[in-house]
Image (cartoon, rainbow, N blue to C red; front, side, top):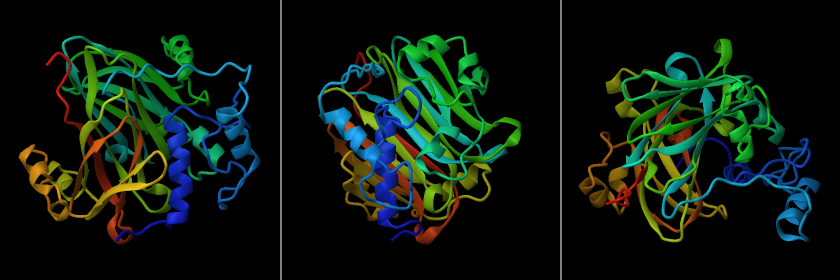
Amino acid sequence: ASGGGTLHDFHRIAIHEFGHALGLDHPDEANQTVVAIMNAFESNIDSLQQDDINGADFLYGAPSPAPTPTPPPAAADNLVNLSTRGFVGRDDRMLIGGFIVQGAQPTSVVLRALGPSLATSGLAGTLPDPVIELRDASGNVLQTNDDWKEDPSAATINSKGLAPKDERESALMASVSSGNYTLLVHGYNGVTGIGLVELYDLQATSARAANISTRGTVLTGDGVMIAGFIVGGDEQKPVILRALGPSLASSGVSGVLGNPTLELYNSGGTLIGSNDDWRNGPDAGTIQSKGLAPAKDRESALLRTLNPGSYTAVLRGFNGGTGVALAEVYDLSPPPNQ
């Protein structure tokens, strides 16, 4: 059982986030032709609107002469994109993403922090001016950006179809070698609100971004943590997803989520897995044998073998609980060149 919004509310939010994870935007914004499917004009209804029709016509109707962004290339069998939406606070309440690069050669990634553009889908309380930082395993700042057009790689980011829709949003492009990395998203001058952190792996051939995580504050309703990811290639991929809360306290994090629950949905919005308390899951033994058992019994974990496509994980508190939590996706397939 879990608290928060209704299934009706989640259905709208999840489908909308699926659209954004695939690079779709809203036709009522300048220069846009595709919508992420959700009513952009009224967010409290679940019926057909003109923007739904525009999106369907574009995706399935006659070819449009308007140019469309080129998505990043999807290398075989890699996690090529991750996006997590959650509340961005101050200090240890920032939205913190982590990823591990595996492989012999560097890979290129685009990292984005969105806020203002989320309001176009009817989301209230968005982060007005997000800032993003990329740090190495020692905590050294490698790159940072506030306002994506000021980044040295802005033109390349735009050419990849990954330019944020609001100039106040942040993006950077980096070449990263094997190792651990951290993303920090916070508000300029300490502003707070709901934000979205994204990682796009542009050339995961001899290297890949794997074992991706995001830490943030889990609230209720629109403030639950929603993580989307894409499995590239044409083969199935085994993954373990985890939702941690109580164990974060041992690292000095205060106000942790006491009982996180985890749900996994496919691109059609169908629930394909859920867990509350990892030991209660049918794959608990396998998860433990992989060395990925959560430290606390109230934390959640799922093992699934996924077909190529888009997926969304929802992390919320049992019975509407709130607090700081960590969402993780582990790629169990062998690293490149192995």
